[in-house]
Image 1 (cartoon, rainbow, N blue to C red):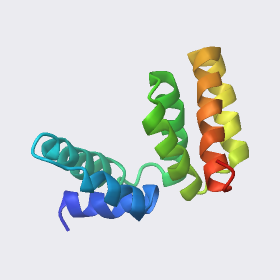
Image 2: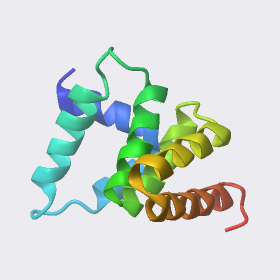
Image 3: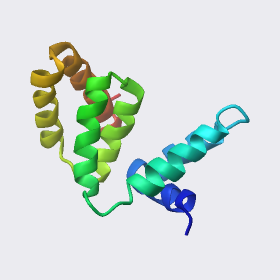
Image 4: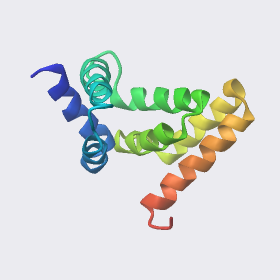
Length: 125
């Protein structure tokens, strides 16, 4: 299996088939190369490495995406973290930790975004 195929499989496992299909349906001549890099390298060569569990990778992503203030990707990875077995309580603890190192505004925004995802999952959004 090449890295793109491995990445596609991992991306669907973590983010869900529906999300990945929506992302790939939006591919055009302008962004095709980026999607191939993200899927083949990011998901196919990094996420598939044995050194960290999917849970650990998800926890790291939540902290990094909070620090980088990337709301869309943060919400996508909240869902991915839940898919990888990270609990809502653990997500809360990750976000509290980000308040200390990334600042309260970043943590406040991350809490707000996580709650949006939770409401959507719970059918209250």
